[in-house]
Length: 224
Image (cartoon, helix red, strand yellow):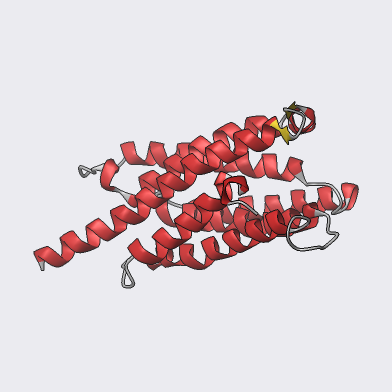
């Protein structure tokens, strides 16, 4: 298996995991950032295993089982992070309510289509929610009284990556079945290529988030 054949998204997930281990300080006031390490480790393992199935590992497995099982994990993780970084009153209650709505949507689509089909309607709903929460985050920035250098803020880069990725892929998922059928050179679906490109952008923004955390820690230590 050549490394050139490994999807860019998988490579970026491992790079983002390594960056989280190297750059996220061990002691943070906002300790929830440390949870990116186990989350990204899980993402990297799931995506790598999914890629290897049928190529290196001789297992006859419907990949939709893998992605459908992981769907709730990444959606609830994102909700949890947004509940932490959006400085608005009652945002936690809002995120909890949204979480219940996602679970209901997930169960309904699972019951209707079962796990042999990717639950892309739930995926689309989650993506729309993340885009909405990203917009709410940006609005909250305008309500802050103190000056805030957003380009040095880890939360800003995390949200920016989410907005770019989910803003694009949510639109793509609305035409999921059509885009999956469009093949480049008769092999790779157009949706797959687009998802990979925007995965790279999102994880690059996340790496920038981790660098911001490290730089802030270094600056704080220098002042003390």
